[in-house]
Structure formats: C-alpha cells, structure tokens
Amino acid sequence: MKGITYQVAIVGGGMVGATLACLLANQGVSVALIDAGDPTETWADDSYDQRVSALTLASINVFKSLGVWAEIVRLGEQPMDKMFVWDHFASGELAIDSADAGVMTMGSVVENRLTVLALWKKLQALEACDLYRSTQLEGFDISEKNVDIQFSNGDHINASLLVGADGSSSKIRQLSGIQAYGWSYQQEALVATVKPEKPHQNTAWQRFLPEGPLALLPLRNGLVSIVWTSKPETTEANLQLSTVEFCAALADASEHQLGGFELMGARGAFPLKLQFSSEYCQQRLVLIGDAIHTIHPLAGQGANLGLKDAVTLAKVILSASESKRDIASQQVLRRYERQRKGDNALMMAMMDGFKRLFSADDTLVKLGRSSGMGLINQSTLLKNKICQYAMGV
Image 1: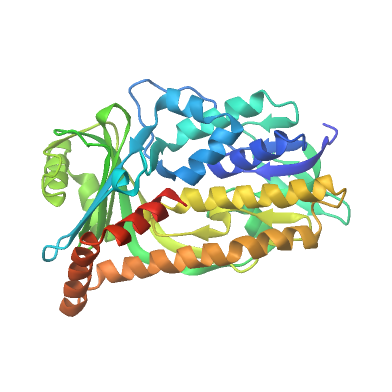
Image 2: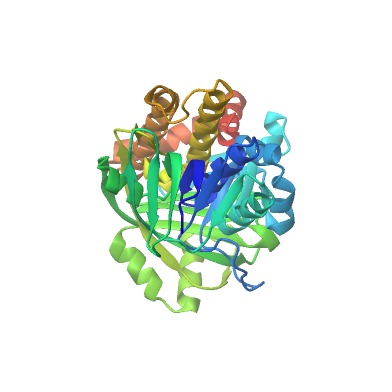
C-alpha cells in the first residue's frame, strides 16, 4: 500500500488516544488512529469490563464538548455523589457528599470499553480521521520532515507527528529510546464486578487494609466494581478461592458495608507500579497517558491524568496549526511537556505518598492518619476542598 500522509498519527486507540484523535479531527486536523485491537467489537449484554474509570467533572466536560457524553450515558455511566473512606486501624473515617459542596455529583464511574466505544463512534463520523483497527505497529523512521510508520502487515503511512498513546509498556517509547523510571509496589490489584446485597447509594467506598486499599466503585445497574490491592501472594490466593469463598472474603474485608456479594463474571489482577519518563518528546514524536506516567490506582486518577495530557497536546497542536507552524517542532512539543510535567509529577508524588502513608505499619503513623481523617471529617471546608479535587476543579 502506498503510504497515505496525515498530520498526526496516534498509536493506541484507548480512552486517551481516542480523545486526542477526536479533539484534533473535530477541528479538521488529519489524523490516523491505530489500534492493535478493535474497540468497536460487540460484547454480550450481561458482560462487564474489569477496567473502569472514575471520571472527574473536568473529564466529563471534555466528553461533553466533543458531543460523546450523551452516548456514554446511554451506554451506561453511573453518577458518583459521595465518598466514604475508613481505616482498618482505630476509628478514623471520612464521609464526603457532593451536595455539601453545592454540586449534584463528583463525577461518574464508567467501564473503559463504553467510553472508548462512544469515542470511536464519534471518530467514524469525522472525515478528518481514518481508523486502523486490528493493526500492529512494526516500526517507524523519523526524518527531518515526516515519520514513516510501518505496520506488521507490510503497509505503511506517513505523518508529520507520531503520538505514542500505547500504554505503560509503550512500543513507541521503547523504539524511540526514551527511558522509563520507577519501581514496583510489590502489590497486585484484584479487579472484578460484583452485585451487592445493599444499594451502593451512588457512593465510592474505600477501606484501607494492612496490605493495601479495597475500593468499591458504584457501577451501572446497581453493581459495584472492586479494586482490591494486596501483596501478590494474597491476591493470587484470592483468585484461587471458589466464588462463594471469595464473596465471603470480600464481604468481611468491606466490613459488610454493602452486605454480601454475588460475583458477576471473571476476576482479574494486575501488578502495581510507579513509572515515569524523563522525556515527553523527541523529534516529530510525543508520548501521552500511561506511556509517560503510571500511578497507584488508590485515588482512581490515572485516566483523568491522561485525558489532561490529551487536552493540553491538542491545544498546542491546534494553536501551531492555526499559526501555520510545524506542529511537530520541538518548540511546540516542549510547550506541551512544560505544561504537563509539573502536574503529572505532583500527582505521582501525592499518590506515592498516600500509598506509603496508608501502608505504614508503625503504630504512631497509624494513629496519626486515623485521627487526621477524623479531624478532616469534622471540617466542612476541608471536605469541600477534597470534593473539588475529586471533581477535577
């Protein structure tokens, strides 16, 4: 196939890559979105995605601006109005209600595949975007004026700018020689969808346990998505439990806040790590989302962080395009890097700090965090600040 030329080629059609494609193609920038799978594949009505995201109001506003939020709501989003956090040690707890901050909701919990499907439906209707489904990247060659991108089937395309939105194991990052730094948390997160005995009350529940947090996120149809962080050996043991034993263990771990549980579908697990790249861009190449930062999931901010990357990169590309400048120049790409690096670093440091605080075994530290949660719970001002932070504003 003769190489078609685009202004931007994005490798990775997940939530962050597809959002960037929408933001650009919506303004007439020619985009190729390349994904190894097919995000438009159908699935059984009674199945649920193990990967979910707690989208902030800021992220929701991005989807509203693109005209895809109504479709996400139709597919099945779940408003999140309240948070309840408590510690296994002592009596520290924190209850936050968006109504106290004068807003209807903090955000929404949505299965990743639903958000991605809505974005791809939008992209199918945009003339400026070509979608490459089930297409594996083979490699790329960067020259002074463009990037030649090769696929494993022998085809190739050209672009002024190549964007790596291909996750924490980014092939774009590896092939470019950009280094990734970080460390393993020596933890695994068990994920599953469950049906609780009691209503979830549009509430995100999180209990801090000795080995890591247990999060129960409200999901469509009255279900709950769990993220249960433990040592790898504990997670593997929980995966091996029978369905009845697992549901009983989950009810005990959550102190029966939602009663008993019924497991809906399979359980999965993934290792947790902190990872970051010192460089965000090279000549005609730039990284976004998990390709440059992977954080602990205890506050569910990973997807929202990546969406901020997409919005910022789109703005600098569109600004350069309107000014008839090279959208892939180092001057343009460094502007994106400068705007995002500080915010990303702050969020990574905060999540790492929270993780260490709530996994500390020292009695004085445990007493301090428990009493600290109690003090915050008595302060409407502080709780409203936390609520605003959770909303992404």
